[in-house]
Image 1 (cartoon, rainbow, N blue to C red):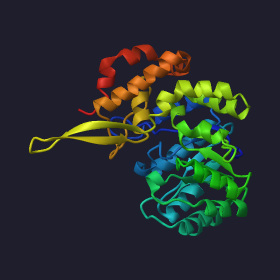
Image 2: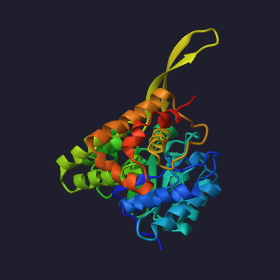
Image 3: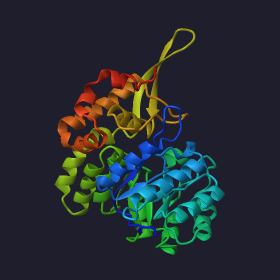
Image 4: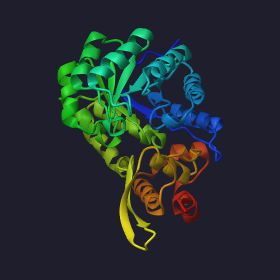
Length: 354
């Protein structure tokens, strides 16, 4: 029986580790999930954007959801990523997640097709609600990736029409005014979960948003500190939450890593280009640099340039200087020494694009 879905606290958007040949690294995935559970994370989110769902086969997609549910062992809820740009695929994936024992499913707005908000609501979310009864769904609004976006009014229609089936939203618009509109139209019953690590406390503190927690990327590295930050804010210990957020800020700011890189044209000219390496490239780079079994990303995502890798390394150095205790759980779990890894030039150089 699935663990009841309680959309609050800190949830980890799990990375998907791959072997050097690009195959799913099942043993690494098991170890990473066990690390999350041992650190008391509030929930697991497999097969989302951070898990590189667009490059997973559906067999792999289903397998990692099953693995997360089995590892959670009926104690920790699992919010399974089942969204697609095909409604039929989303329905099939949602049926599988329900049968596997997921607590709820995360449905990203349809990417590339660019449906209107009306079409998203009627031809996507409502069809999944109708064709896959019982399991709750969480819309995932991230126009920076999907281009399309479910409007606040259509979100409110879904939630108010099906409060138990659509109890929450993952908000990754980066737009606090939009989030206030979500709250104003949907009412107090909708749980708003942050989809942006650096905005989490702002979203929780703003009365017009009143976010309930975060689906976090950086909990792949620091599950207990992020969970403590969210819990402190929810319990009214704002100063404690802010202190924790300040220590984590260097890595929160690197969910997407933007750096200038030089391009040499065939005619000999050099041009600077701003490259933005998206999630999960930076977090997987940081995990690998620290000696965790993350593996690389699947193409078209790849290695970062040396300046970007160094920026990730420097961010970790800053967190280590401010809070070395944050690294103790991963050191004990994976048998590494963070200080030594951060000083190992060769280890970080090996992660950069040649």
